[in-house]
Length: 528
Image (cartoon, rainbow, N blue to C red):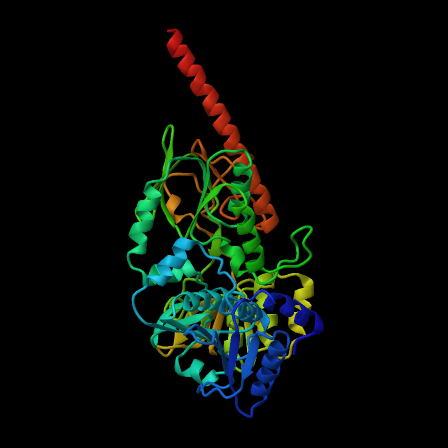
């Protein structure tokens, strides 16, 4: 299953382990068990520290555990972790094999001190770029604290479980048999839910921080660029981000970032964070801002946990999120048939009927991708023509299992109380209401800026974007903004990074001019 190049790389990685590794496989006579057996045999063959035992008795087949013999350290996969999860497999081998875990010592200690027994199950799909973060987070937690157990389950191979648990979005986590959460989560986010006192401790820590020269709110491309440019000036720089990486984390493929021919969102986001951390920047992750408080000499930002951060200048780079259609049923059936990421959740709808709402590039691309997995796709577009690029439209129209409905306004998403079973739309040419029977709805109608918390403090456009001038200055002195959250047209990564750099340079210029003015005022007062 592994080509020669990957085997060579794997051999290099496994040379770094310091402890023996035992892989215990639970198999049957099925084709997927044969695939898994072949994969595990190839892994065992590249390192004399790895042994394979094919006599596992786990009820899920195919599955396997990675154990450190003589200890209770163990990581489990149910399925064949290839695709996006191959990295999770390699990391599990390294970490069970004693390779150092790359987490802050304070985080490691917090995991060790968790009191209780935790049995996690994570359902993933191999095409989900968000799933590895959750799988790797829970795997490493189980290695640090053996009272935490985790099994990562490929939902496509265990469809009966997916159906019985009504899982329609990945990653989906269960803790001790009960629903724990859905969507991307880091170690810190999972810890925050398990350790109920973590929030108050973090608030105390943030309150104790000295004022910054530049405080960036947001950790996407714009925020990362702003932080780097500020730190390079040698001034005190902080970044408070709800999740470092921002919307990029949900991007499947990036092929238009100049000088990088192809990458994916999670990898790009990791590189952004690594670059920022190479400078003296105080990164405060998992921190959501809720109020901007302007001041003459210092600007304050109140966080959701009650902490208040102070800074001489602030750069707002909070980005945007998927836009909702705001019809009955959308929120009720979110993750129960209503989805926003076709790459992540598409495999869960294999053989089913779905709709895609939106006829721009993202909507048409989603319909094309889904058509290769599901039984049928209905694309619904509000306007009288699609807005996607011609090449995408031609591809879409060539697919036999796709219907396109124009001039259609979605009015309601229907369900049976537990999952989606249909959608109603108004035919805008006849004003009649029509219904489509289906099992899933993927919403792809663009983005909305994250500015609700800023209303009444900085000027916003009619679309909720922060109004800025050519230098990134907002209507509040000392407050700048950059990226998708602003009125700058064309929401692109490369543009956001440039705007972040510009806002940071403008903030530095503001600091210089302000300090000069203050010095002149002080001199004049002394002379008087």
